Image (cartoon, rainbow, N blue to C red; front, side, top):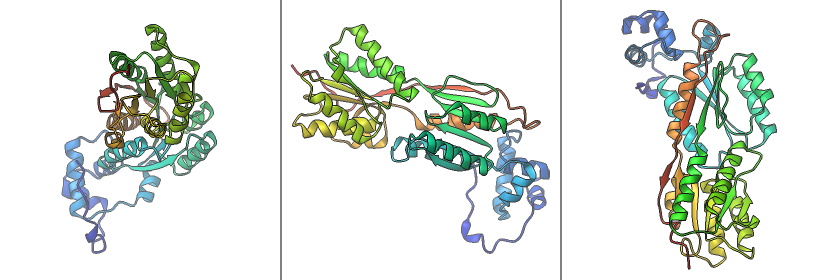
Length: 352
C-alpha cells in the first residue's frame, strides 16, 4: 500500500536525488525509477520499501523530467459518458484509488454521450501523452481507436467483445441482469411489464432491450408497443418515458428501467399520476448507485460493481505494458462483470 506524503513538510524538504532514495532503500537507481514509473517488474515488497524511502526523504520526482527520460507520463486517461450520473463518479473514485497505489495519475474526460465531444477527449489524451486509456463509454468509433493504436497506446473498453494486442475489454453481463429483474417481477405475479431503454444507438442499451423482449416473448407476457419506451439514461428521460406508458390505454404493473437514474425519474412521474410504488406499479433499476438506497421507496435494482470494473480496467492497462518493446503491446485481456440482484421496497405483488 502506498505511503501517504506529509505535504506540510514539502516547503522545508531538502533537495534529494534518486541516488539517495536508492541508497536508503538498498536498491539500484533503476529499481527506484521502475517503482516511480509503476513498472510491473518490481515486486510489491520492494516497491513498498522504495516508497517508504521516498516519503522519508521527502523526494518529489519531477514528473515532466521523468516522462522525458522514460518515455512514459505515468498518466492514464479515463473517458466516461456522464459525470452527472452517480455511477460514473463512483467508477472514477475506484479507478483513482487503485491508480494512487500504483503511483499513476488519472486524466478524466466526460463525453456527455456525444461522439463529437469524444473526439475532443481523445485529442486531450494524445496531447498529454497518456500511457493508456480506459474508455468507459459506448460511443467510441473505430477511427479513433486506430489513432491510439498507431501510437501504441494500450486501451481498455467497457462493453465490447473485441480484444487484441494492447486492447482489452471489461464486459458487463447486462442480459443476466435483465433476466434477474424479470424473474423477480414474474415471480411476484406481474404479467404486464414495461421497459425503458437507454439511447438505442448505444450497444449496451440494445443488449438490455434484446434481453427484455426475448424474455417477454418466452413467457408470453402482455407487452404493447407503448410499454417499451426509449429513454436517455437520465432522470428526465425516465420521467418522460413512464408518462407515455401511463397515458396509454393499457398500463404496465411493473417497469424495468435501463439504469437507476431512469428508474428514479420513473418513480417520480408515477407519484405525479397519483399512483403508488410498488402498490400500483413496481419499478426495478440497474446499477445500484448509492442514491438508490435512499429513494422513497428504496429502489430494487441490479448491482454492477464499480470497484470490480475499475480494478479490471486498471489491471488490463498495467499488464499491457511491454517493458522491452513499447511498439509491441501484449495481448489484451477480457473480464466479465457479473451483476447481483438487490431487493428493496420498490417492488411488490402485482395489483389485482
